[in-house]
Image 1 (cartoon, one colour):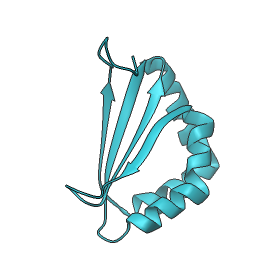
Image 2 (cartoon, helix red, strand yellow; image 1 turned 60 degrees about the vertical axis):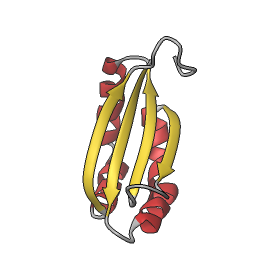
Image 3 (cartoon, one colour; image 1 turned 180 degrees about the vertical axis):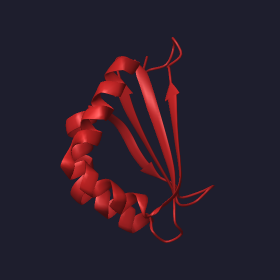
Amino acid sequence: MFYEVRTYRIKTGAVPAYLKLVEEEGIGLQKRYLGQLVGYFYSEIGPLNQIVHIWAYPSLDERERRRAQLAADPAWQAFAPKIQALMEEMESKIMKPAPFSPLG
């Protein structure tokens, strides 16, 4: 299993608006296409205004296929600019669990 860890730095004060948009419009689309949501988080202590979400994929090819389907959906194309306007930075990492990890 591969885990995509996406970290976004949101504009100061915009985290509530970001979370509301995702809850009302985005997460349903993401779950439909991306599959297994491991977790969706926002920061309280440390670097603030961060959103982290983690998605699980059986392979990198499957990740690519699913992300392409999401990107092609007109509803996602209409939604994405709304949250992108609230973002300052985006980072995506692909992680593999250690053999002893509970997510392995």
